[in-house]
Amino acid sequence: MTTAYQQLDQWIDAHFDEQVSFLQALVRVPTDTPPGNNAPHAERTAELLAAMGLTAEKHAVPDAEVKAAGLETITNLIVRRRYGDGGRTIALNAHGDVVPPGEGWTHAPYGGEIVDGRIYGRATAVSKCDITTFTHAIRAVESLGAPLQGGVELHVTYDEEYGGEVGPDWLLKKGLTKPDLMIAAGFSYQVVVAHNGCLQLEVTVHGDMAHAAIPDSGTDALQGAVHILNALYALNADYLKVTSSVEGITHPYLNVGQIIGGTNTNVIPGKVVLKVDRRMIPEEDPTEVEAALRRTIAEAAASFNPPRGGRAISVDVKRILLARALKPLPGNQPLVSAIQKHGQELFGETIPAVGTPLYTDVRLYGEHGIPGVIYGAGPHTVRESNAKRADENLVLEDLRRATKVVARTLLDLLKTD
Image (tube, rainbow, N blue to C red; front, side, top):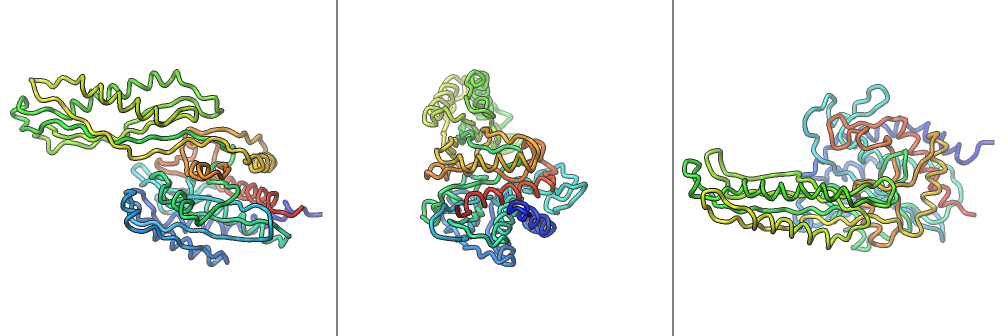
């Protein structure tokens, strides 16, 4: 006798070519963030969902809020499927925004090209793939025609790269959703229950612009910035001594991801801007971390001695992002147990519950008291997928099996006793 799980698997197999075509269509509409003009992708996604019989509510974020977040346009989507009285509502969240492709690609970044069982393109692994994982898992469960209780919501949001404040956070604060549990886009060989936090600061170093032929008439902001950079990078040696108790998370670290400054080659730089990214382990207090960083920057600025008797530098520090760490919330165990059980059966290996050094939108659901985990289609590690690098790709068999895991998990949590 065919079991319900086998019926789910068979439906997903029968519709897998359609799922891959769905992913290709999503990849072929760019959502580079920056600049963050993401409403067109939401419109296309809603069209594709409608063709499958899934109506998406379109929640356009007001222009002023989008611009304040540093983006251009955002429309978040919610698909609601209600099955029966009682039971839990489970949200499935995947983000459609991505970083720009950059250089070095050997496959078209928006082509969705399939070679040797892999699909290539920006967001094939993070996380347009899981828009399809979650969509087809929902469709598979509904194909059974079985009595269910509770409901499912598909959330397609467009602000993960900039922190989620006009993505999931906006939906939650507006009261547009309040699920009981949630699964967010992830990879197939582990279920993530915790992740790092992230603090980003914009540090503006002011010197005194001058003609390069008369260097002693100004103060080089770039030299001052280098002095501050050395003090910031020196902190990484200390961070190695701060370890997390969460499996999969090691220690804090700091990166300067962008440096902007100067006017022209023949001008002493009068201003330099540094953008600092500080990853925080779950045990750290973000307030203390930010205060310590600001002290390091202030002390370095005060200790900088301008050459040739120039004026002292001054520094402005502005917080541009605070993403708190995800900590496991009581109530997430049904998700963890179901994913581990079905993942082991379908992937043939143990699916550990671990933390990750990344930060994600799941923390926003956690801050609203909604237990969640991270699970979806992808390899063992981010590096294997080339996420945020050239030739990002996804093994299609991982997509197929992860969809089955999510469908089985939904059935476990929604079926009537």
